[in-house]
Length: 325
Image 1 (cartoon, rainbow, N blue to C red):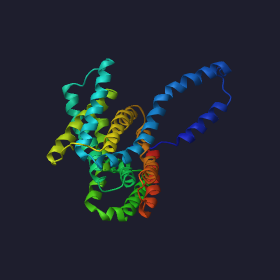
Image 2 (tube, rainbow, N blue to C red):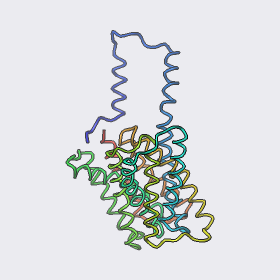
Image 3 (cartoon, one colour):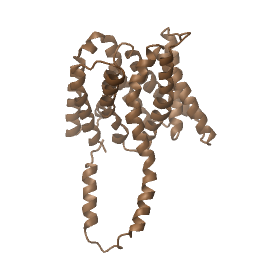
């Protein structure tokens, strides 16, 4: 991937260029400038709302998932979540006249949905049966590290800033791995650390396969991934409880509406309409917010390894993503 200059530097350069005298037309009158601002603001609204969704909502889903898996089987819970969310989104889009996915697009949605949801989301749900939500968020934040490694393996050598980011990020991973919570349940920790690898592979595949257009891609991926999660859950011997706890059901409802319909649809939109660096920028915002939420609302203890690893990993992801075009 190519690197580019900083957006701040580009903005300064643009201002300097605009200040130089030119032989062009005179500047727009104040009324025209006001109209231009009024037009620009609505055009940015989908971007701002999508970023808010992946920043804030996804930070809270780690705690919501931990509450849900305390009373519901992890893979079946995820299967129900994504089948319902994907079905609602597909029905709404079809009602608005969007074309349904073709058979070929459904086939392509299966591996992407499997990587996103069985590997990415499902492994987190299993791990959170014994590990804290803040730890899970910090581990999942390493996803762009794996994206950069996959790109390097494909022959795209990382630049200096990306190389520093990769080194800093994996120092954070080592620090995080040395914490007492990770060592207390090594199997859950291994499962958790595989999650961002799967999500990174799904993100790469989603950009390369001919999936449905727009939000229909998110609907197809959620339906395909939810069906695969349900199949994996039954294969693991999971069974839905006869009387699920109320707080687990409320958490599941939150995950369906906000975590899936709102946030994943926003992420899907960002992947297709913005630079990859911006689409994946949630990765260095979510860890700190999720750790704070887990400690404040979930009464989760925050160990020294998490406190040290969180800024290390967040800084590493910022270096890598800001180096991308």
